[in-house]
Every structure is written in C-alpha cells, then in structure tokens.
Image (cartoon, rainbow, N blue to C red; front, top):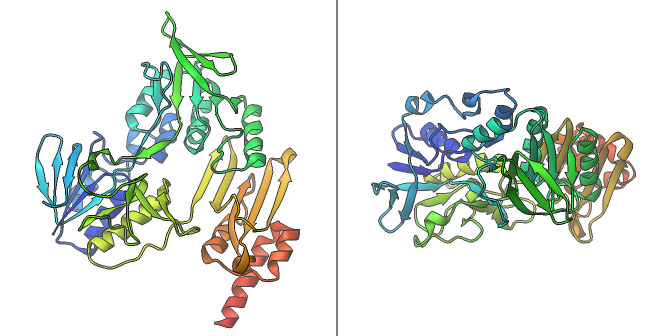
Length: 421
C-alpha cells in the first residue's frame, strides 16, 4: 500500500507518523515544495528573536523520517489525477498512489496596492521570509507591520524585542478583530501603545514607495506617511488549492471534505488549512486555519486512509495569543449567538476582560463561546465546558452574576453528571 502525503506541515507529518504507527509495512511518501525539513510556522517568532536557530523550528530531527521509513521529496506537486491515481511533480515525474492526502496548507495574501512587490516588503510565512526579515529588522530600523490579526500579533512581539521602531496598521477598528470584540481588542491596542508600539486602527496603507536611498515611504489613507526600512504584510491567508484545477476534486474556499475528511475523489483525503472541515460549534464545514485542527485532521485522515472508519466530529475554534506579555484567548462562538445571554468582566485599568456566551432555546444554559484578556486562570475549564456542551442548570444564573466562579460551576456540573451516571 502506497500512501502519498502532499504537504509537510504539522498535518502532513502527523498523518505520516500515524500511518507508520498503524501500518509498519506501508510505503509512505511525504512531499514538500520548501527546501527545509518540515518545520512549524508557529516557531518562526522564536527564531526571529534568537531563542532558537533554524533547527529549533523543525517539527522533527531530519533523521526521523528515514528512521520511520518515510520517504521525503522536496518538490512541488504540479497536479493530481484521481482517475489514474497518480500525482505529477514539477519535474514531470509521475508517482502512483493507493491513498493520497492533500495537506498543502495555505499561503499569505497581500492587498493589491502600489509597491507591494518592492524588495523590502515581505510576508512572514516561511523560513525564507524569516531570514529576510531578520536581516532587515535591525535595532533602530523603521518597520511597518500591515495587519494586526492573529498572524500579525504573533510576530509583533518578536519585532518589538528586536528593538525596531514598529508601526502596526490595521484596517479594522481594533486588534485581532476575528478573535476579540471591541472592548478586548481596544484594550490590547492600548497595551501595545503603552509598550512603545505605534498602533493605527481603522487605517489602510494606500501605497509603498521606494526612496532614492533604498528606504521606503508608506502612505496611509489618512494622508499621513511613515518611513520604513521594512514592510511586513500579515493580511490573511488562503488555501493552497490552485494545483487541483482540472483534477475534478471539489473545492470552494478549500478542499471540500466529508466527516471522514474524504474529498469528492475516491481514495483522496484532505487535512489542515487546506480542508473545509467540520466546525464543532456550528456543524458547518469551513477552513479553520489553526494548528490544533491541522494535527487532529492529520491523525483522523490517516486512520481513514487505513480503513479505520473514524468520524471527525468537528474542532472547536480556538485561539491563544501572547502579545507583549498580555495573554488573550477565544473559544467557540466567542461572538455569541442570536437569543443567547452573555456576561462580561471589564477592568481596563488592570487590562482584564472576560466574556462568557451562552446558547439559546434548548441550550440556553450551555456555554457556547468565551473570550478573555489578561485572565489565565481556569482557561482549560472554559474550553472543557464548551466542548462537553454541559448543561449548567442553576449555575448559569450564578455565572451571570459572577463569571469568575467558572471553576465552581464546572465542578458542580460534572459532579451532578457523575451522580446521574
């Protein structure tokens, strides 16, 4: 049995290891179009501040794949032919498969503005991007970061620790608008400003122009301009699905899959940032580009490639962010649901915020989402209550009065369930 895995990020590597664990005799081929051994993008900020070298970003020691009898190919996959059950590499080599996993992840997108292709404008997505940024983000240099979403805030800290003069431009009215509401996102902005970062929300870059000395000028829609030695774009990602054109495999925002992570083509599966997997909270299928989902997808897809018939029940949408020492979280339907109650703690002087969101109708006492800022106690309990869909009963009313009693609510509710069992 030959298994081909296209993509060597966390999803692909976990899939390869799962296949090997459950089938010692299978032939496993892992393919990546990046020249480095498989690595974690989440480790790039640590590389930028010198906490780890390039090797510290690797998911496994490079010798691991040989030890596991996993063949590793550094090449781009040009296309896949489900009818012939083969893939074609960029050098036109065709390789047959019995089962195939698409785990090609996503790629950064940048807005179509003047100067976006200048030499000192970079995304921060690959190790090569990180090398370029490290060479330009010197102490005292002027750096403009375009985007204060999740990706932008991950690299914000590493840039600030390098001692640059950092300006962050975010078109939304707050930082990480897809993770935090107006109050929490506003507090995060104030925190960063107090740490010396120039954060401009509700702002857009209209052009990036190169000066005669090699530096750049960044023009804003307000009419202001900022000097820049380096511009970093962090304005979102899209699934890597272009190579599937003409394959007949159904795609939308990503690769369309069922609850077993199988695509519309026989013996072809998809996992990670490229797959439109099931969302735990809504039951809908969409791309959920977070690493815990990617690794979970990789494991489940591999088991199904082996015929284990494992259903994917959906992943909870969750984000955890450390921005210059201020921790924020969001879980599930953090923005709430129609007809559902909510309760919040808001202490701007202490940079503390919590919002608990409850369901509606027959789930009116079920915690369906939450977001926090500057509060790190009992975070696992919040996530556990959301994932277990525990009915809180009378404890909902108590939490509406004091949401910090979340641990008491958890213990009381789980004990009640144990007594009923």
